[in-house]
Structure formats: C-alpha cells, structure tokens
Length: 191
Image (cartoon, rainbow, N blue to C red; front, side, top):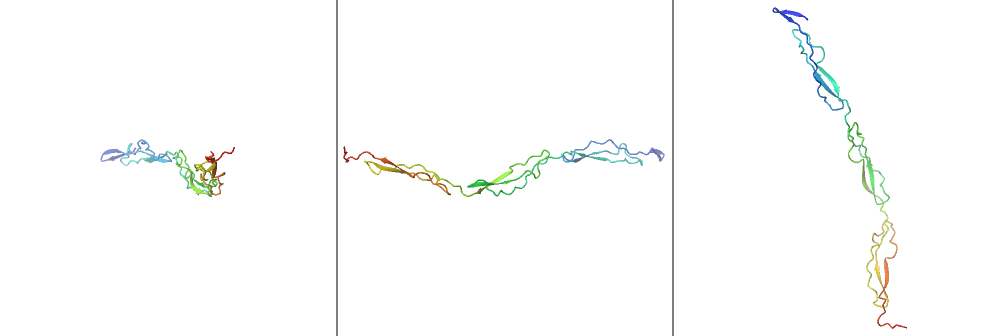
C-alpha cells in the first residue's frame, strides 16, 4: 500500500478490485447457438487516490443453446406431367410428383403438408362400346281378327348403341307371335 500526505492528511492509495459476477442474461436464441452475458463492476473497492483500475474484463460472454433448431420440410418444385396417359382408351390420368426435400424435415421439424402426387385428366382414343338392346316395346295389333294372324313387337339397339368399332347387338330387333287363332264365324268346319 502506498501512503501520501496531502494538506497534512495521510492518504492511502486504493487499487480497484472487482465485485462478484452477476448472473448470466437470458440466451438471445432458443436454438442454433446464441450468446449470454454477465457483468461485474470495479467497485469492491473502486480505485481511489491514484490507485490502479481493475485488471480484466467487466463483461463475460458465453455461448448457449447450441442445439440444432427444428427445420420444417419444404416441397420441391413439381416434376413435369408424365408423357403417358394411364389406361388403354377413353379418359386417363397424367401424373406429376414432388418431394419433401427443400429442405427435408430435420431435428424434429414438421413434415411437408399436402400431397406428393398430382394428376390431370387426359384423353386417349375412344373406347369400343358394344351395343346392348333396349326394352321390348308393346305388341302391335294383330293383323287379323280371327283365323290366326301375327302381331309383332320391336326393340332398339340403343342401351347403349354400338360405337367406336363396338359389336352390334346379337339377335333380332323384332319378335312375332301368333294371335287371334280362334276360327272365324263364317268358316265351315270340314269334318
């Protein structure tokens, strides 16, 4: 310790000394590496009467929360639609895809939302449609009132009709039956 006399007073030279460190501040990041600080003051005691200042730093910096941050997944751009239209005729589908890779989810991050595939309708050559009969119509009037005649009913090949090279309906479009087979009143029975 150095002693000085000033105006008949004895003065002691006081060198500075650090106080205790304060507590570290909150980390400035929750993940991915941040910083935290703590401080101390040169006041235990403070330098006086020409004493030396404290030696060292008044601030201490420390790394914190160095764990990786969660990374949510992000979709890549869509691929081109496939050149091939699924199916052999009629309407098909062309497909395109994307991946959850821009970036992929990591460190507990959320997966991509939505679908990884998408489709659009495409047309192929029309499908062959074979014909099928519709319902029979009613029988028409008999062509005679007695002595045996015929009546006829019709149907159409329209349920559906054949198209795009499809086969016609099998069978006949009409049907006949005998009718009014009772003898006519003026016929003479030969016996």
